[in-house]
Image (tube, rainbow, N blue to C red; front, top):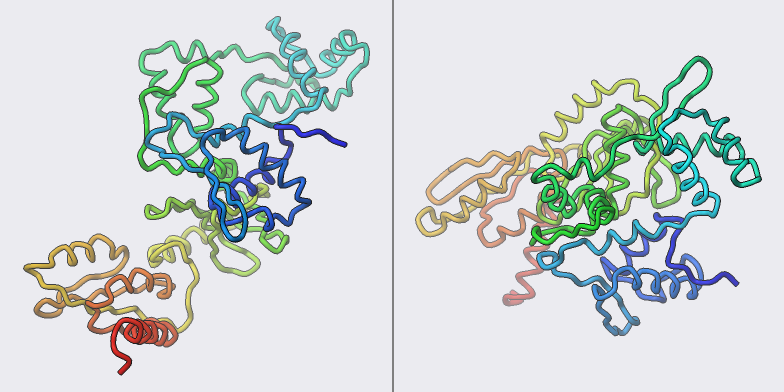
Length: 405
């Protein structure tokens, strides 16, 4: 029987588990349907060993719920970084890592064949040259090594850069400490701190969405595809894969959630995916008509109230007429100006203001519109379904809080 280990091979599985059980906290043991209850216990023990004192436990009617509870303004290090330091390696990976770096510390250039022969002498078992070549390419991608082709042979040599040289300048250490707790890719800064034995002692962030670190790998892959004009193969909830052309990463200033805006060539429409539930996508080939799609997206996003890029058919501009006392309730007017986004605000009478939202999906603005209930004099446009739903909601609220008649 395999023993329990804190190390992981598949970060994607761990990411889903931490998100559903420990961050959003709406699942209990009985909701774990991936494998057996034993697997749940192992996953729970593994995460508990990473997060330590950051967990709280609550007994509900559905079972014992476990969740992360931290005050981001009081922690010097994002506890979720620990999940990235627990990946498992094979014995062969470990051997190749240390022996290759030791052999190449002489500063000379070597081919993969030369290194395979040297490793064969050391290990007495000659490793496959293809395995060595793949490991060398991995180190080149990571910046640990450089390579150059001479004739038909590719030569590799060790990079001379070191963290100590870069951190020797004034202010660089403080910059790295600050960077270690910023929202995007702070894991890089945290890794540098751990490697050099430093700790963040100065920078604390009150509104720090620590959950973002679980989606940084997805974000990095998406940004690389956007930068290179390539497609992405995205896995959907039903298990099927869809090829899309990524355009932009959107971030909500209200919830902190991040979204990937993309174009689906097969459906000829624009889509958005939430990064926290998006599995790690795979980068595909070069997209053949990026300029045309980018122009269409720019026009559509200018008419988007949030992240919805669905063009609703037969939708009219949504018109909301608001009553607000200009002398006593100027804060209402300021709020309209501040939150109208792509809408147009006009004064249409004494203490009366009209907001026109010519947006691609009027339904997306309705949650915000309903926050003005009690001040709305008229609601026009949009779609018949939106207006009917709004009137039904108002009538239901009246029956709940006022007289039946």
